[in-house]
Image (cartoon, rainbow, N blue to C red):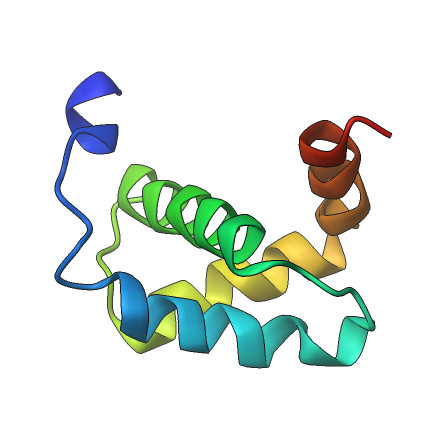
Length: 82
């Protein structure tokens, strides 16, 4: 798994952040740019671990799974200490 998280995401991060941001927009959860970056990187890693890539469809599908599984409040609690 370490080899997956070591992949340089810089080339794809901006496009993926926009996909994640638009996917979670209806959840009424405000994320700072830093939080959005961390969440997007986690989603990108998850996509790779599932055998996918950084395509729009894969990133959106994983982001939707994060929303449906109620992951976002747990993500915020972990990153905001609440």
